[in-house]
Image 1 (cartoon, one colour):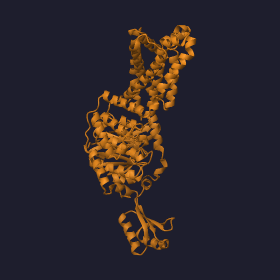
Image 2 (tube, rainbow over the protein chains, first blue to last red):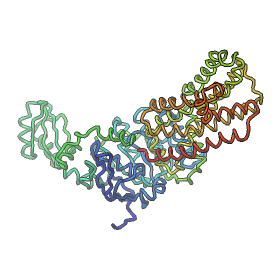
Image 3 (tube, chains in turn purple, yellow):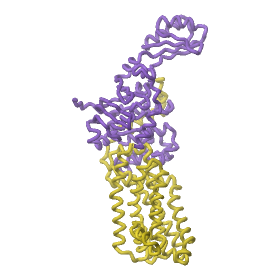
Length: 331
Length: 283
């Protein structure tokens, strides 16, 4: 095993067993400094457990890992000094106000009283929480809570940040805000390990992705490589006039495979691996006088990626992770 | 799908973006806080919770009031011949009982706290490991002080007159709070071993009822059957009651006080590291 100083995370054969479940079953990861690395998988795949080991909250049963050059078991204290964690359960204190949460964290990180207050004010302003600063966090919306959670992780700038499903349960606007924060953070040079169930999210943010299932990394690559391995996405076309559908079907079949009539009498779909061919097919319809109400060129969904990689759908284990988190806490 | 509403070029989002960039630009990590500073910060967290939800002080105020009134007026006449005379004997005992019962809530609070996501954040910080717990128990000492004050003020209102004056009362309260600090570690340990707050509450009260009643808090041990007298005299709660009674009467010996301080130290020495260990391995 050669050590690369440019690696932010270097994990080899990480294993964590809960009872009879091998939650993490030999995970290897190599994450470069300054990048966003996505860990993609369904609930119960072992994402959270992996993150908790790397963040020194759980000790691995086998294997080893170095985070920014520090061993996660022997040098746990050094690891804690350079990382921060935004957990799946919002890691903020619900019984305090947003402002108090940030001052608390700032004081615990060693800022003096005046600096802690100033930093809290600055973060509340930057994360659009200034108006809610003196409200109890239990009265925050999901998006506000998540922003506060991120702000709490950034009181001092971490070299590496663990983000565990940062947008699960958020509305699209809040999700975009979180994504903007992540992008800004990366621009400032922080390395991010991002766990997510959404291919879309990994695609938007990550430079590299590991797909994890049953505690094992089953595929690794750039977002483009993964999507390609999942086979094709699909083109959906809705016509203004359902009567033109047979004509549209004939034209599409010349360009694309798997043309299907959808239950909606004005809509048809085709599988489409590359966007240029999809665009060309739509252009042909339009040139032939088929009037189009709208069309979309879809990426493969996580389900499709999963199906392609594992042969089983991702959704079947939904809910297991939640139960496991509970177990871990009780253990 | 890739259209991003927050990227629209309007002045508001531009300002937000500038603020965000500024807030994210490198903020170096200062040296880590001392053990004391981190503990006091957690103590401050405990106080803030009381500030936001003052109702949680109800158990620290109502129970002492009930105990004091009930025991004085129900049993005063039967045990000592008059309520006034019994109160002189009873008050230090009620003080001990009220404060010790409040320590169970330290365990309950920890059980509730340990299930929350924020604990993960605390555990991932480079701080002195026992700080969250030491801070919580320090913060709880305020509750013990509240319970003690309620008992003393009510007692004086009902006619309790300490021989050793205010100084004696303050010393007795301080001693009881120090012992409570030690005992609280037992319940924080229990709190991390049990899964639900109500289990901690029941378990705690089940242990404290016999310990407080089978002591010299309410009756003179000489009136008891011999085997029970032996138990009562060995009971650490009796030692605490004897010492606080002595401090209020101005008759306490260094040995009596030393014994209480030693048991508080022993409880802390055993159960504080145990709690810290459980807290660390949790999760």
